[in-house]
Length: 222
Image (cartoon, rainbow, N blue to C red):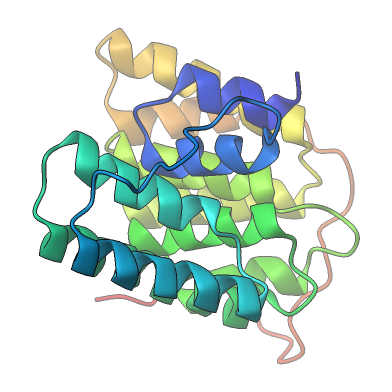
């Protein structure tokens, strides 16, 4: 089982994690008609969004997951379509921020990060220093940390710093597990992240700075 799958199974309640884990596990059995419980008009609208995503080369799993989440919660068809449309928009924004070479999993993870308040500029900063490394795990961990109460700016700057120091997927997964345990034990989420981040070893020199020559900024929102 891959690291991202372990993370998704351990935090199945987090939609971002579930979407990414679903995108990587195409072998599991699926409902032959997962949208059958939608009313006809809503189903048509969702299917149109799925078709648009396929044509644009965007992952469809996050859209399907969002629709099925709404169905399971007995949300109205109108609300479900609205949420699926929002997810489609964030996938497009993630593509813009991460670039045309981003993988399907990276786009799903990037969209999840945008939905918890990470900015396109912050995603672009990570993408500019990616070299040949995959951003999926760092972005999923970042999103989950924010959903667990870590302040957005603290989570964003910490993950970026670890990324610059050459942290690997296992480092981010270990960080995530440690922070989760500390939060459950009663530690403030932001403090838990900062404490655990100090334990992550540096695995290489910082990545190249952006073309402007200025260090990346991770707090763009007021």
